Image 1 (tube, helix red, strand yellow):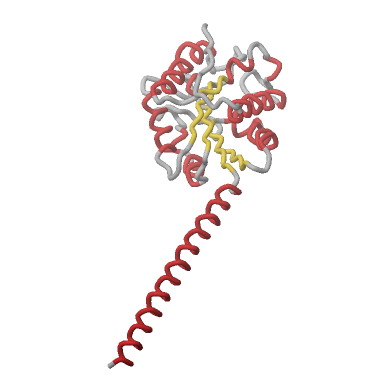
Image 2: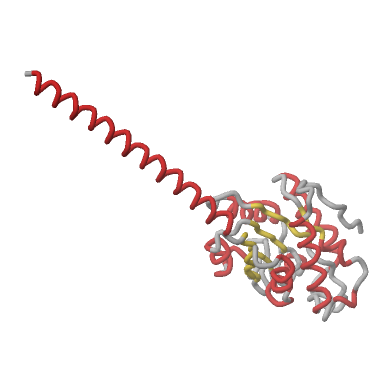
Length: 240
């Protein structure tokens, strides 16, 4: 009986030691996994999705922005020529393949610069639903996994006077609605319009920025994304 008690006590003690050992191993494994995942997340480049129309797709500003931001970032160009915020236009951005690709990119930062084609009555006949359409577009990115930082870029000015693109419509109708959406959704803005000022020479045709214009767009976005004070203050908007 004494032998059985001693033997049983030894077995119980070994079992406790084994259980403790396994618990420690499991705990250390969890800690190691946590640090590995944390390290991977820290090393993962920040993904920036540039959403927009031909000014985004064709000007080359996303490439210039990539160069400015460096290897810690991956900048994706998801611009679509002729696209609009308005769902009632002939080419809504949300109907385009690039819209789905931008979401599949799983961006950490989204820069949306749309509105120029909404100021063209040949493309967009009605802007009554512009704000609700813009809110829907923004919501589609906010609903992605993670915590996306959404930046609303104010469209650049229109200098061309011999086309269907309407500068007055842009400044009096579209830009105020863009600003309104940003304020309602508490989103930061990047005022590309004011950045250009009266630099008509920065445009190839009065609508599409040339290389200098693309550099100005990229640098303005860069300054906003990397500013030390990451407040959500908006800059002043143009007054017609």
